[in-house]
Structures are given as C-alpha cells and as structure tokens.
Image 1: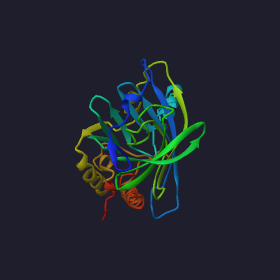
Image 2: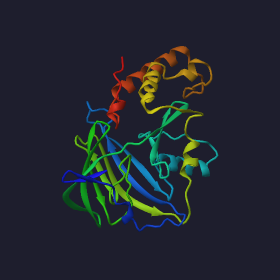
Image 3: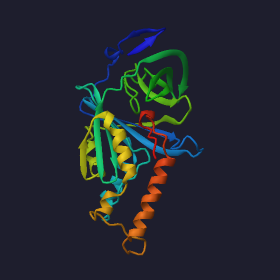
Image 4: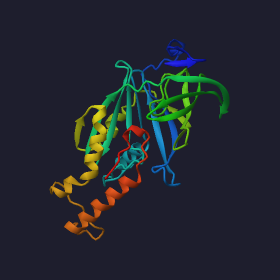
Amino acid sequence: MIAINNVKFLPYFFLIPFLFNSQTKRFYYNLNFKPSDNSSLIQKEILVLDINADNNLFYSNEYLRIDSLNNTNSTFKFAYPKFKKIIAWENKKNNFKVYNNLSMNYYFYSTTQKIEWILTGEKKKIGEYLVQKATGSNGKRMWNVWFTNEIALPYGPYFFNSLPGLVLEAYDDDDNYHFSFIQNKNFSTITDSEKIIEKYLGVRKFEIKEDEWPKVLLNYYNNPIPEYKQGNAIRLKNDGTQFSDQDYRELEKKLKLSIKNNNNPIDLNERINYP
C-alpha cells in the first residue's frame, strides 16, 4: 500500500508496460552493512535481484561467483556469503519465501511483508535516472528508498516491493544497511538461479513458520556444531589431521562469541538475547 499526504491507494501495477517475453532481467546492488551496531566495522557484499515474469529472486552474488569457479575447476568450493538471506517473490501467491542457511541445514518460510509506503516530494538523480524518495517501516527499522518510474518494475532489493518503479537505493535511518544499485544485465531466456543456489545450501531442508525462526537461531547458538559432535562430519586442520575434542570445544566457543558479537540482523525482530 502507498500513501500520499496520508491518503492510501493501491500500487500502480497497471502502469507497467514491460513485457518479459521469457527473459530474466538482473539487477546488481552493493550492500554496506554493520554486523554489529556496537562496532564501526562495515561489511560489503554484492547482491543480485533476478526479475522474471512469474517470480523474483534476491541473493548474494557469491553464489554465482563460486558456481562459475566450480564449473571450471575440478575442486568443489563452497559459497560463504556475508548476507545470508535469500528472498524469493512469487507473483501468483503474492508473497515471499525466505531461505536461511545454518551449518548443514537450511530453513525456509513464507511471509507477506507488506510495507505501507509514504511517497515524499524529494527527488534526485542516481546516475542517469531521476528517482523519488519513499519511506516505510519494516523489521523495526524505518527505511528510506529511492525509486525510479523510468524503470517501471515495482520491485527492489530485500522486501522493497510495490512502488511505482524499481528501487535503486535503500537505507535505514541509522544507515546500518545501505543498498545501492550498480548495474543491470538482460538475458534472452529465463535464468533458473534457484537451481544454482540449491547446490550451496545445506543438505537438509526444513519448512518452518515465520515466528519459529528466532527459536531456530537460539537453538543453533546453543549447539552450533551438532554434525561434528555426532560424528556425521569431520573437520581437518591445515596439516591434514583431524580436529580433536578440544579443538571442537574451542571452535564452538569461537562460533558462539561471533554470534553474540554480530547480533545486528536486518530484521530486528530476529535479534536474539543470547545467554
């Protein structure tokens, strides 16, 4: 829903003249974010938004980079994105699916995430495009987004949909997360990015309810290396020898400390009060 001067109306989907003709339009964004709001450390990641006629997919470019390397090398490499969420939009169902990877498992749930946008009169140029500012609340953060109706696609990074044009920039009031458009690429056919990404997610898939995700995060913190403890996986040192029990205890300790220190999720509803 969009509001101008506090009057709400439906998004301008009928203004979209764009025809996909069985092709994928890919948009690249740079993300600067603070994994901890108690630190000045800024992480950087390139993210990708693939737009198709029936669905969209928003994910880290790290999956594409690693997949390209694996297609040319004999040794399989794993993808370790800094921004771990994968977000799929389904037009027919009018909702999102959110995928989260934890260790050797991945979890997904459906969500609507309808943002009530307020359009402002502020405008500026981003590259060659004239953009307009809109504001809205999501995940306990107030977001400022800049969209252009020169690209008549009502989508953007993360959950930033339903505006009268493509979102080229978005950031929260505290600038903990800042998305900036880099470039775009058109494909002559539909690109099935989900198949690529599935190769790098966990081996076990679990469908959960949205409100169960914080509990999953807390359980993971309490036991971040269950596969190693149960003997279902092994970890090797640089010299090729296996981790000892003491090594695993030290690894678990480091992982828990890292989780506690990097507790600034993009959705503050997912912030856990870890013990």
